[in-house]
Image 1 (cartoon, rainbow over the protein chains, first blue to last red):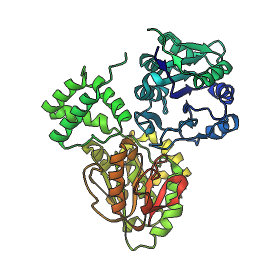
Image 2: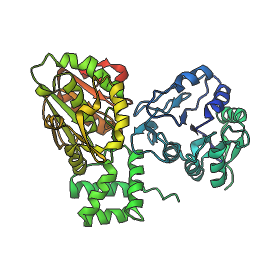
Image 3: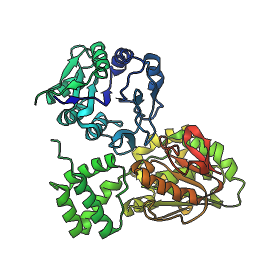
Image 4: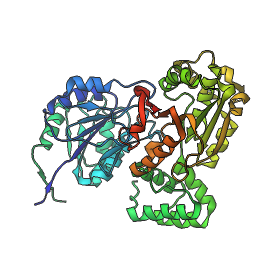
Length: 198
Length: 273
């Protein structure tokens, strides 16, 4: 059986997602090898303080990527406000100021779709608490490309709309409370997983 | 519905066709954004595939100008990223003041908001009379909008906030006239700006200037095209002149980095060595 390894994790969320990330990020140990891109909806005109917030929680380095920033292992990249964040196939980030998608810039769909195109089955996508449906389409793209999908369980999410929309659209592999998502993500790096029969 | 992703070959064939027939070169554009823009164009133009789009674009120049709209769509604001304009005013203008005449180049000006924002800063600093601003773009329709200098009035509440955050001395209302639902920018601003066609992908430097402002343009280019474009910008900035980039653009990954020092790192303003 061929081994499927995850090479990158993308996480999206909106209202209530900061608290979910406070539960998830501390579960990732020092030396965790996978890169993570974290995208939360933010007011466009203010500087983001998410980097400081996550630095206080995470044992991994946290930064806002610049355009063409190479994606490095074990780093948490936080999407900057007022830009779309995309992943290029060469393993670097790209940014755009194209129009908002579903009223959002950054848009989770834009990040997830580009990452699915770049990483295919080697991508894991996580959708957290949020009050709109951004990310549902992106998570579907990840699933179709053979990647792993996770949502924060709508029953425990602060705002259920976002994960519920994804569940309605896609057969998401794992739906779990935030604290459990942290453990699941921590385990992704531990062992290559066998490919599920399709 | 998720439309099928065009193959690399289909994409390359379309861009080659556009280049050879219309001399617009998108072959070095960053792929992830380009694919998204192309997907919107396919939906809007009701094309089932990139192959069909290519055939139509080759046969109908009008279809090409519609496609161009999608590939170059660029929306900006007056004083987008106010701290950038504050730094231009507080850190760059004092230096520019020492020159008898000042030339500025806004590369990739889209519909003109950035060029007008700079013109307003220079006007308030008493420099506009001896300043010439070149504002260039590849998209003729955007240049027409830019040259007209007429924008929707309902955008100006936000523009005024940004203007104040950018260190504006007076009121933004001093620089436009409201007419029905439009704001018409002051003739004095327009007279200081020369709008024209220029491509960072295919053209070379055309003037030596004291300040180049090229923001959120390089993000659409892949690394080799970025290197080319930054080379053109470098050749255009005089010694000790300035280059301003977008908030998330950097010279860190560029072979031209050593031609510049970081003048205002937090606002991505560089100074030519």
